[in-house]
Image 1 (tube, rainbow, N blue to C red):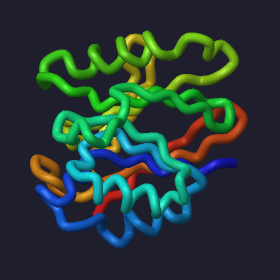
Image 2: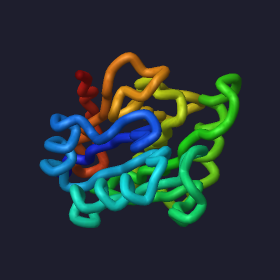
Image 3: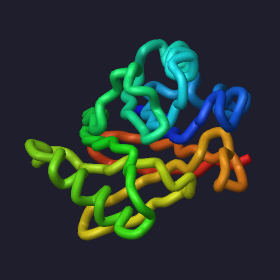
Length: 169
């Protein structure tokens, strides 16, 4: 069994000073962490990387400096589940379909694995099926506007199955 901390839209230091203590603790307890973009700074990326001991998959968000050299899309297989991670940059209209399309395009070779799309950008928690693709959005780990609260998802992955729990302050 693997515990995967899933976060996004930390926006440090532009909208928040640091991750809430409870988010930091859940990341440290996790076996792996996924960040769906909008760190906002190299310091935020380094800080989160240190919390994960390098067990981190991260993508670029629309506010991330290009100097971070993060990919727009990343994939990671964990416990028989393939996570396709993208920020979901773009307008609100068409967000879900845009993310689902990206997940389908990057899930090749996952015949033996379940596929889960992870995205951010909206600062709103989501766990939905879109055109046969399960999409997770953990919201904003710091509660950055327009979020009302800090949120994250912890996924438990085992033998190709996944269960998710939303955490909120």
